[in-house]
Image (spheres, rainbow, N blue to C red):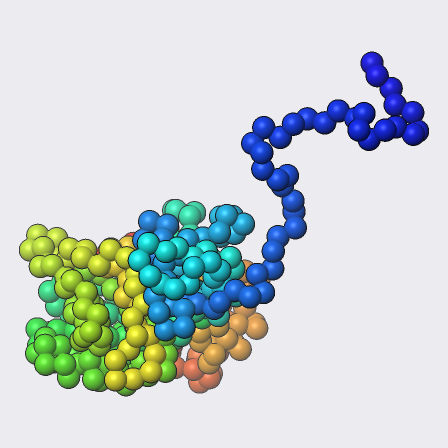
Amino acid sequence: MRRYGKHTDEDDIRTRPNRKGNRPRTNIRPKHEDAAEGMVLTVDRGRLTCLVDGRAVMAMKARELGRKAAVVGDRVALVGDLSGTKDTLARIVRIEERSSVLRRTADDDDPYERVVVANADQLAIVTALADPEPRPRLIDRCLVAAYDGGLEPLLVMTKSDLAPPDKLLELYGALDFPYVVTSREELESGNAADRVREHLDGKITAFVGHSGVGKTTLVNALVPEDRRRTTGQVNAVTGRGRHTTTSALALPLQKARGWVIDTPGVRSFGLAHIDPSRVIHAFPDLEPGTEGCPRACSHDEPDCALDDWVAEGHADPARLYSLRRLLATRERKEGD
């Protein structure tokens, strides 16, 4: 075994050759202080279309971001070719902090959390009053996800010419959030889009709903210059529509400031990632009443202090019913 003294000649030290011929790895990463700011408009098989200085730029995620994925609505930093010309590709080197996140899981037993949209101000929940029949449990789940992710809800009810909205308004009136009722004739004439647009001005709004409810038709009316393929016919056996929107897409709102994000139709909205204890924050009139609740109270048990809080007149009983119905969706199936 060869031994070296205190004064070795560096040229005499044998080193292992780098067969790949590249530089050794380092933990120091560039800060990319000159990176351009952009917004993710859509994601398709690893390629992200971003808006940079008013032009669409195709990009891919830099390896240094690891498993962190960018989604529609994300504000990102980009380097590389930002011209937006054909066959050019930029790199996303940083994903900025998100102000809100809409998440869901495939079902309540699925531990894998999917981020659908980032940085949206509002969640427009679109439901038909008939053909297909409304699914209150799915609406409830979307509401829970909106409250948990920091989005304000907006309920859009379509096809009022086929059924009245009274039943749904009775269910959700106590939650005190805005709603719009439209008919098929109004959708076709554009009057529905004008009334919905009043709630979208200056905001980034994500649209969600199950297939066949008229969501994409409404989005097409809001952004006629960027029409998406409309929804297929509703299945007469299952009462459900066929998915035609296959990826989320952010579109600039016409005749107003703001953005519309169209998302694929959903048939389930899992809440495995939601902590039920956070749902109460959406009910400021009930939250003070939880101070007298036992530890780890589910707010739907005999010792829950909210019953006395409501009985003393601090809040409407319908509000407590709505809270418990939203919390119960954590254990229910959407079609119940």
